[in-house]
Length: 501
Image 1: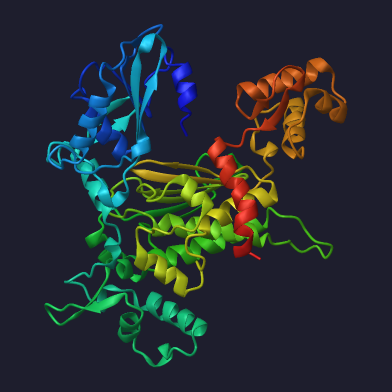
Image 2: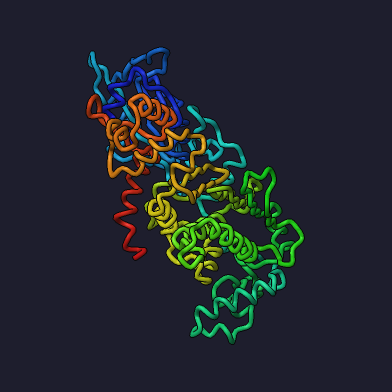
């Protein structure tokens, strides 16, 4: 992520941003160091550079007078929990760099703390928890602190609801769910169990040891509950589906949990209704076979299913906004849920790590056979895009929400703003087996030097492609994301195949 040689070589020009902080230091750690340490630990990590003060047009390089002493002081304070609640640093994370004129600076790589250790706070005061926004540190607001503390110990949907009973669950949803699970596991004896016995057997209703009564878990209520009962625990519970195809200003079709319906609008019914609508709309997009029958893209349908389930299984239902939202547009879909991802985007893409916020909800989906490869939904989503030559999915996540954009059209077609020539050049670069030169683009597309140059300049300016090499060796490749993301995608092709053969 960070190249120290590049940082040192550009120390005069490097500026503060969300992952870089410069601090003037002479003989000791500045007091503001710990605020930045806390904010980086609670956000996405970053570098703190001691001995450099941000300036314009160039920074002021004063250096650190006794870097070894400052480093020792830092280690001593990191081990003092009255100073900071968690130490995320290893030996290699604190480096002393020599500059010209015998000036030394200290570069400290602060790692993002695991969720179980957040919030990272200072001075033995949890209200002194900081977060990074833009290029500065600020104290967490009360609601942000509550969110982070909730994220630090998820699985809240496994808690039982002391004053709720099976009467708060929708009997029609429960019968339907039980029948489907019984068909999948015919030898488990579920058929002979009562609905309550069945829910106890699968672990989503439990006996309250204090009252000796059987209560549903929060996850069971969300998944199978009556709408009004769900709203008693989650007043902001809301799920929406919009079909916004054909650039419709409103929508062609909508499913909303707060509108009158023949079903109780819990997660189970919302999922079943919307899944059928998505399958119908997406199927109509694909080609006909020689018998004039639509050819189903099973891999992409699985990617949609995983995206849909992740949206509900990873939602923070205690947040009031945003609500869960599934939207379909011409060529792409959007999935939004309240709450941040509990793993990094690269971990999601690579797969193998499962940390659902709502384990009961995920378990109920698995019992239905809707989500079987726990921890590999991310690779499946990205692998589908790679294999179908669709535009790479985009993920945005912050403390309040997570958004996934999923395309089902060719990469070049997903950018309608491109001119015809730009689209042709972009498609040529995308489909080339490796980096391709401008001359080869001209020859393949029969373009003039002026036409190819203008198209390439535009594609570079909008960051759709990037340049490799220099001078006569200059070639171009598609810019499908960060280098880290490209690496992860390459890993998908070679590493994840074994899970889907």
